[in-house]
Image 1 (spheres, rainbow, N blue to C red):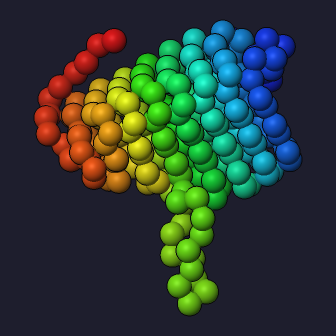
Image 2 (tube, rainbow, N blue to C red):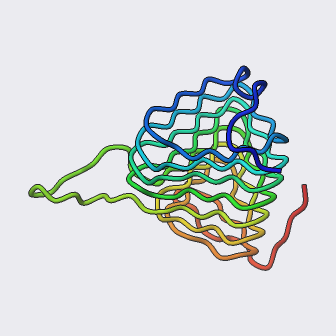
Length: 183
């Protein structure tokens, strides 16, 4: 069952700062411990669904009309960083498992201009059901990861990958197809 705000226990166990207006849908069954959650701007959304576990993670929503959604039964490991900026959406679907130090960003962090024109606009990120991101994986803006994928240790995903694949490296490349995995 979804609640519209953090439970008292969730609020006590985490550092939560909200400046502006935000729509929160936080499941009471979500286990959120020692996280740093910062939401600044207007019309932003944070959704954390049932049975999600998040520990020692930084969640950052900056700007207007941004959103982060974490689907049911997903696990976000220690020292991870989830960031939605520039009116963009970061969507993590159900049954995902992220190891330690995973970074996912909808923007480059700082604007870069050429002749006064922004040249590095933010883009949405979509991580489909049953995705496993190993230690130190980075997922950059505009990436879509198909369902049932695995991304290997220390990989950086700069481009989207199809379902049922394993990708490794920096930049990550698909090395296996037609795979599945279980927790």
